[in-house]
Image (cartoon, rainbow, N blue to C red; front, side, top):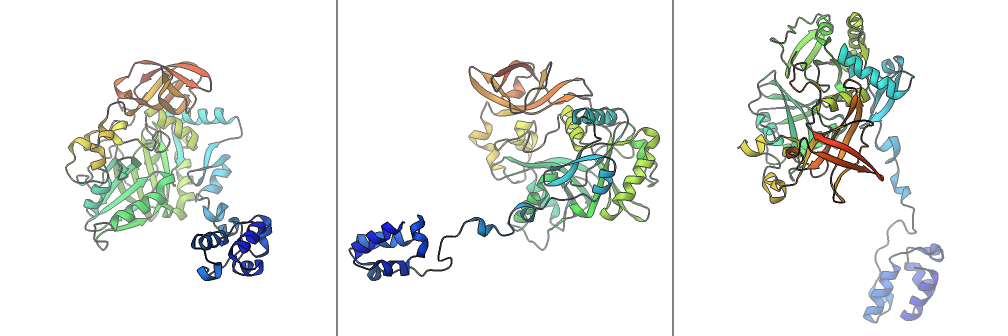
Length: 463
């Protein structure tokens, strides 16, 4: 409302301009083209054929003049609003020449060395496949769920059946929204009869904690279930590669690390140098791997010990970029990258709980809807192609229409070929089919394949 509008309203309602300005939130700002609730008051008076004083005015509260919205931001911006999370080993990573970058809200090593990034990343991936790599997995979620009703609770919030999980075991699973859409994935560890640990995606820790807390208070006795985020209390180093067992054996933890005594998807608690040490045999690389966790204050000691123990085995630090390539070779997904806002677990090849799980779980009814069971849903697939990697985001096209798109794409240094993952309509039933992939006016030839292209039999994983 401009000053001209104020004068016109004054004339129509037989009041002075000064009287109107006394009641407006604009004050002298009116002639700058600002707006206020004065226009509403004038309109109401006109509709009723009365003057503004007769209609009455609202009770004006600060601000009396327009204020830029930026003023209300206050400390809710930049690092003050979403502080970058830091690793206990940041100084150690920088000492080893890490290229640090933000990943999921954490400042983490992307790769090590000052050479060409692609070369350095490829070198790390090849080394981890041939010998042993040391990866900082501290940001992975470590959210404890405890209490008499903990078993029933985790069985409800997970798509997969978790009540049958035995102490000392791990199980991969999905958390769903009420819509049935995958919210997060990860590994659940059962540390005791009433004690579980949720290992969720690094970027989803805060969200998963809030998710668990919200459902803890919905239909449950909150005094029988407790949720505690211990992520930043533990430092976790992953030893991965065919020589990982030999390196870990030198820590002298007293554990039997043989494949028979400590199989894949098991977890053990022990002590090391007088402090608690937790070892989980779980892998994001698709190779023999151990996630070793100690209290955050002992992170440097553990790094030094593993580096020394692995010296004769060629151990070297591995950044997140190399790990991303290795997980794609194995067909492991990243939620939010290899999924979208419509992806359900059966689109990713996990159909059994939807068909067989009898206990109620979060999102169960949504998985039986017409949309969830329709044909043509986008399934997770791999892409086989020659030459340069497919562009991430490129669309699979047929008849001028998109049938899906590429979600992850890399040049695999292990296989010396391009690999990719994607979501394609009815893709699980089209394995082996030749497709065309389009991106920014350029067309690529590819063939749909299974997502896993590295060690599909799992021999290295279970070595």
